[in-house]
Image 1 (cartoon, rainbow, N blue to C red):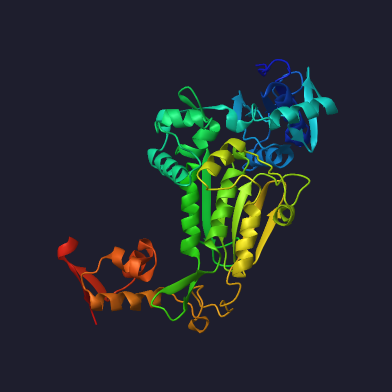
Image 2 (cartoon, rainbow, N blue to C red; image 1 turned 90 degrees about the vertical axis):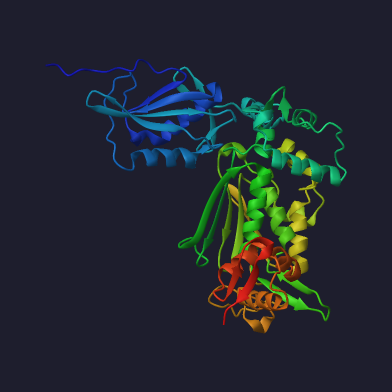
Length: 457
């Protein structure tokens, strides 16, 4: 019986065949050329140029190798669908891809598809594509999303509107979401633009990953969390995670009130977080990351820092802003979550300089990182305890000192509420609850206002 021969037809301007993954470099070049001409296409491994299926040997790492080659050598980043297909007893790999952020570069060179050839793009065409991509009229954030006004997170929306009105930067009489979104330029009829969805919809457009590591290396983690949601919601989660992970020391100035000092200025951390979300390359699909190490904390934003400038230029000089997402940054400016005059890095640096906190900035072709070093400046020693907090010689406190203070408050008033404890100690309600949960000698008897605390010896 003759062996059945399968054919997938001819190559076109949107379909490319490669005999095997030995042609990975050429495959990535073809993908960039097709994207620049048609915004989508298909590529097969295990198919001859004439369309004859010859099969591709596939092992456990084949699909991953293809994905990594595309991720490492095609820019801007895309996220193709890579899968196996079977034709008789032969298996091929199909890569389906799409993207709207032309021009795409393969191995740092822009190409354009002409028939079944991948030609080097002429400079005028490349520059025109760049101008079009950078124009707000063609940018990702100004494109219409699949989400409507009814998908808006009302809690986030009302919180934003209240804040923006309080600082006096908007004064809309009509507070209906449809009216506000239209006036902010974040909606077309009932549909939100991508910028509006990213800001106010709890969806998968934004992702936040947070982790704590046991040392200064990215090896053993002690906690890891992942969230999707609106920019405003995720920014709050990230800042709270940093606050909860930080060590704090106490200063007494002779008054009845204690002064708590964080190891990293909270305002600087908040600025770094909101900038990470607002300035990132959102269409890359990559996460904003918060990583807590033993000696430092890092906030990572996907998307290369603008060419031709450095963070130090924005810190030391007066510079015009370079906005990757102008609709998002403008909206956050109205609520004073961020300023729009290229001063974010300067505010981070100024806050850290005042606190004596060392801060550094790192960038590569994939993203930008702000690193805050822990336990720097006056009042912070190097005598770290086993739990990562400072010893009493530096005047700091740990959860154990909170235990003693809570016990003292209970001795004075055994009906004191957790909220009253938090207010008296100037700490969060969450911290109070965490400390109480760790205490074996404190129990609440009864329920509600009729109950009371009891200390066991």
